[in-house]
Image 1 (cartoon, rainbow, N blue to C red):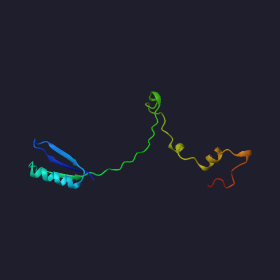
Image 2: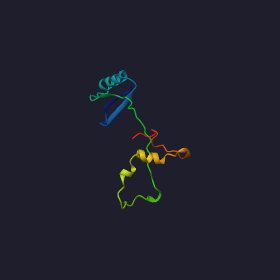
Image 3: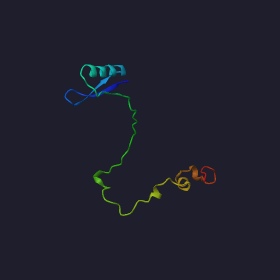
Image 4: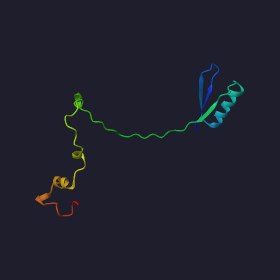
Length: 107
């Protein structure tokens, strides 16, 4: 796992260096303290943060047709899932037979 060492450089500016292992980070801190006189070293482990991506759809209308507020509020009940009766009426039935009473739809 990679590690990063943060410290204050000779010019007083914050500095950092990445190292490929904890052992290398410790050796760098020793060098900074013993050779360069840096007393404020800090070591952090770097681990990857897993990311997940989702597909998101957005509906847009050309010309900003939805910029004006609607005169009537939306009927959210009409947008809900259809009832069993509405589905039964919408299903095409062969030879004019009825699906009612056949157990095809359960109430």
